[in-house]
Length: 303
Image 1 (cartoon, rainbow, N blue to C red):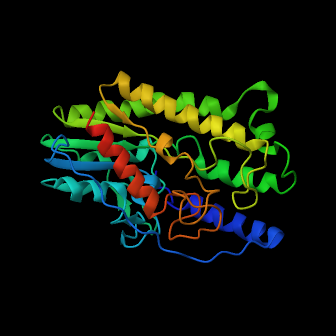
Image 2 (tube, one colour):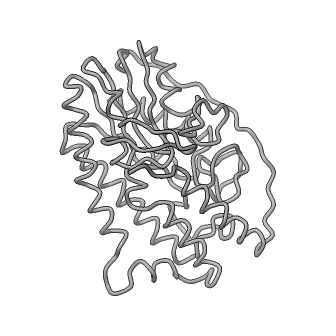
Image 3 (cartoon, rainbow, N blue to C red):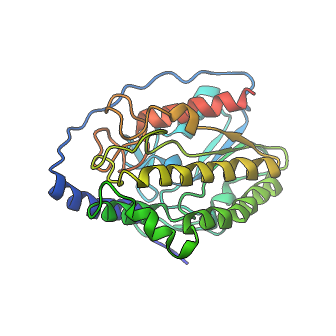
């Protein structure tokens, strides 16, 4: 079934208005400098296909080259493809994508129908990168629910209370349920491109790796920050183990993002907060973050 591609941006916009009115937070925009991406002969230089969601696509990072998917030409696949001189390059990542969109297709942000991302993977493909799973566990609704709940109890754990009510951690259950979906994607990629190197990327840190965050810049209640950090690490651990179980490698983008979360200054952070100071969608990587993920991917390929 076709689905809209902007649930996170719409939810973030509504939450931004609410939190800004409450906290009076004002920011100015700044464009980050871009560092050089290292090159290596170890990286496959044949056809490269990038599959993924908005963390891959780079919504609102200049320059947007596909408004239907809110895709930037400064996202990490574009940086890597340019750096290694891929013979051909197909970036079919799309904001809002789930594992289902990779396998079966959907619709874009302006309503245009999209084929399965998998259809870009051909038998002669040398490298496939996959960054998926965040929307399968409900990233947009988690951000929206937790941000709204934080207004009633910024020092407490209202979000954790919602998602663990009744004694079951719903978010951990979603992570577990997403593993076979990621497995299906990786097996389909392997069938389509038997000789390709497949790399699964995790997700960078939104909240700090220690401590209790920075409400209201990132409007997550103090006691909810450790809980959501645990969910993010669980998602990344699932992606790493699923990659290993299916003949793919894993690129850890979380570790190099530590100290570059959304609570850090505009010239340091990889991921923006509720009201971005650098061109990017709320709670998404900016150009610096995409550069950092490109570096992590290349480091992974060199191992």
